[in-house]
Length: 351
Image (cartoon, rainbow, N blue to C red; front, side):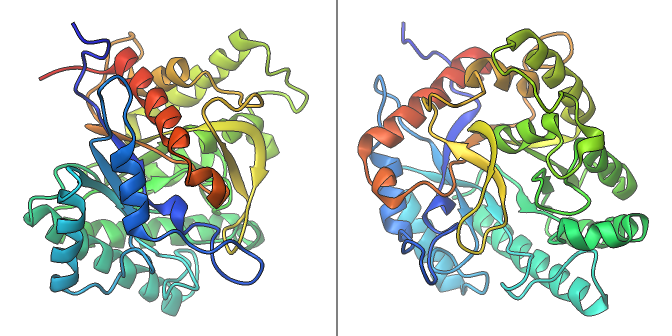
């Protein structure tokens, strides 16, 4: 009997750590997609490997304006390494030709244009047979500062924009997932995230993407102190209180969760390059990590009764803004794959 008997949820690696926080003056250069795919395909633990990758529709990896020929080439790049594609990230924010969902009409038009392009690519990859699961990831593309100038008006605008995005997604039979990051206005606390999802009110088209690193910061109220579940001076060695806080958080957001990122976090914020300060992604064995990855994933992947949910047919490791030197080491990806397998062992299933 194998040490890892479950085959679901499938295990994906994110390719975007090769570009997020990279490039530009004073930053490390991007790591090309072929290299990220090679690193993913080479990882192996106990005879198990990654099943697929999630992609950022952003140059130099995958252009949001990719032609059909370029997408066919992308599909072959992935297939040749015995991988598939899952979730794709639409670059809805400025300066990637997108706009703020809570902005003026021109910004909203730019935002929705990027959503449409993202859904077009997602559908085509599905039709090519290389994308069996996954969603199109979006966010509000609105800064917390701008949101704070007129919270109610901005929240309403973001909801209206996302309703229009849902109409677009329906045209392509795609689902959208809004990622809960504290750097995005209207989504920077767990209460506001729930409020936004309810205002949009289209769970068949818009759900929540839970990233373990980002949602941990919801607990301590970075950017939204009034919504903190844990005190500012919380002692992270108190595992029982942390679990109680995670239970409260996931009780509100789990019903919306349709995409899941496994990650580690040290409960601080971090940002490099053009990426706003957000949850610091750590290596799974980082001594400062505050998450018990396999155990804490269960708050999202099991229901209130402890039964395994089968909502997310694949899960993805997200580890943005690691140094290039660290990402080029095979042992980095083996340790990450081992953590992913631990989550699958604890909360997975077979079909």
